[in-house]
Amino acid sequence: MNKKKLVFSGVQPTGNLHLGNYLGALKNFVSLQKEMDCIYCVVDLHAITTFQNPNQLRNNVLETVASFLATGLNPSKSIIFNQSAVSGHTELAWILNCISRIGWLSRMTQFKDKAGSDKEKASVGLYIYPNLMAADILLYKATHVPVGADQKQHLELSRDIAQKFNNDFNCKDFFPLPEPLIPKNVSRVMSLRDGNKKMSKSEESDYSRINLKDSADEIYKKIKKAKSDSDQIPDNLKDLEKKPEALNLINIYSEISKSTLEKVLNEMSGKEYAFLKRKLAELLINEIEPVGKEIKKLLVDKSHLESILKKGKEKANIIAEENLKNIREKVGLI
Image (cartoon, rainbow, N blue to C red; front, side, top):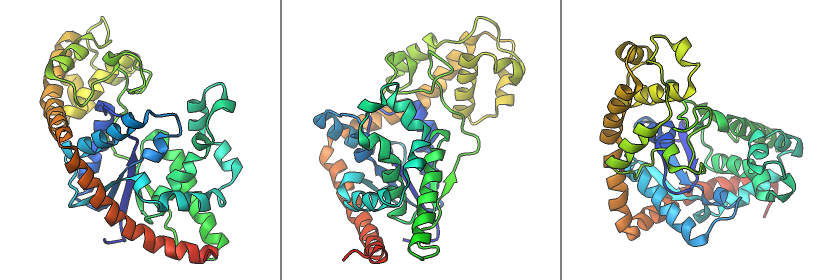
C-alpha cells in the first residue's frame, strides 16, 4: 500500500447502524476509498469497555461488516477487519499506555459523559480507551482519520502520544501526526424526538432514529411522527435555528437531496411541515431502503462476511507486524 496517504477509521459494532452513521461516516468512507488507501476496522475491543452479550457482539460485528458492504465499501480497495483479530492493537496500546499521561486522559470529556455521575463504577477500559484508539491509528502509521466533532479530542490525544513517542525515543517523524478529515458540509444528524440530542441507538424510542434496516413503511411512519413545529417553514436560517427539531429535518433533507440549506428553504418556506415530511420520507425510502435490503441479504451468508474479515485481518497484520517490529526495537523490547 502507498504509505504517503493512509486513512484509518474504526466503527463500534453496536448493531443496527442508523441514518446518523450513514450520513456522518459511511458515505464519507466510500468517497475516501476512491482517493486514498483506506483501512476500516470494526472496533470490537472498544465495544467491550461496557458489558456486551457475547453472542450479540459477534452478530453485531458481522452486521457492521454487512453495513460497510451495503453502503459501497469494497474489500478489494479497502482493508476491512475486526480489531481483536490483530493482536498488535493491544500490544501497541500497552506501550502507549506507558507513554500517555494520566493528566491527558483526565481531560477527555467523553469519559465524563459516558461514565455518568458514578465514575468509580466505570471500567478502567472506558477510561484508557483513547490510548487504544491512538494505537489503532498509529499501528498503521495512518496519516488521516475521518472524525466527527465528538472524536476530535481523542485524535488530538493520538497526535500528542505520537509526538511524545517520537521525542522520547529520539526518532523524529517515526509516527506521523494524523490529520483529521472532517467532511465539509455534513451536519450532525439529531434525534427525531429531540433536536438537541444526537441520533443514537441508545435512545429508548425507536422512533428517534431511522435505522439502516428499516422498511419503507417504518421510515414513512417515523418521519411522519418526527417532532417538528406547528408554524410554517421559515424563509431564513436564523428563524429555523430557534426550532432544533425542524432544523434537523431540513438538514437531513439537505444532505439526502444534496442541496444547500438555502436552496431547501427557498423550496420549502411558507409550507407546512407535513409537506416537508412527505418529501423527506420519499427521499429517505429511495436512499435507505435498498441499503437495508442489501444488509439483510448479506447477513444470510455469514461465512462470506467472515471470509472478508479473515482476508482483511491478513492484510492488516502484514502492515501491523512490520511496524511493530520497528516499535519494539525503538522501545528496547526483545
